[in-house]
Image (cartoon, rainbow, N blue to C red; front, side, top):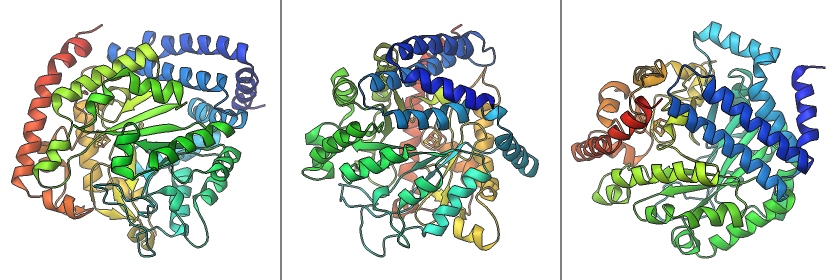
Length: 478
Ligand code: SF4
């Protein structure tokens, strides 16, 4: 019997028994600490401590939600199969090794770990300020055969088993009589994280997800009922609460996605907010995204979380993760977990973003592209070829120079973002002249002096707030 099959069978038996589960969790926690913190000599100690804190929260979240009956046996089996075995035992999986070796031989580097795919711009809501909200026959949507080909290439060429789906509203996707459920079913050895507004997750959809076992929805909230309904529409929050119940009833693990702005940052600094969603409502994880200022005008910058508040959010993240063990990550403040920026198809933990028009971008938050899947496929190329444009290569060079290639002496990963935290460098050294803006707002700021100066000022201010923390708590900490 293969080593991974033995582990899979053993883990399944153990996690399905409550007492054994607790004992196993303690053992795994100890084992993780030893491997991530004690044995590691190549990274900064506090970086490893943060990684351990995050992994420990993953474990805690799974155990807690299984104890409460919020994660079914089928979902656990799939989670172990796809996430644990495929991640930890990929190195002993011949098929996976062959794929990765073939990629390295052909392209001279290892493949990225995943992609974010937005197959449709269609959405059933009309949220204030959302550029994506439209719902008609002409709303940009990738044909099913293209979505299928992209997923197949991620699986067969990148050797990856994980895809994030975003939108639009993914549960609105329809093409040639197919929906994303056809993809989830076809690629049942892959795991899908789906960003959704949650309003279409009725009992029937929840049951289908439970049967599949390889999908977790991350549902968007803006805060509590008032804040969510104000932006997303009256009655939306109640539908979200119902979606939570539908998912818990059939044991599908779900999470939340929250955009931090200057308006809701005070709420995100209170413990009550997290206690409600994790303890009372049963969320397994929460991803925080700080509002990204793309577009002209003062309003855009007024909504952005100020550097001093960003540091407060960083402290809150530290506290919630270590004291409460709730599983939370913030795309900017948690940069230490991923050795900095993960865009530009980075080899380790990296990704690229493909939107509903087939445009391939380095990151969801970098609204510029030079490649497009339709063009690539017309020329018998694959999504692997898009990793070698000047745009992607410039970004990876910056990531390497910044810290990926010297993780013992990196630059400040409390400001990891290649575009938002280092805009001057992004414009001068990363964005090539042939890059095409994704939308009107991205086009407007391309040569806008005021925008350039405003982001430069933000970056300088952020540096003054984070440099001391980085130096004392990371570089000098041993
Ligand atoms: S460009 Fe910024 S938002 Fe995108 S992965 Fe890098 S750090 Fe994150």
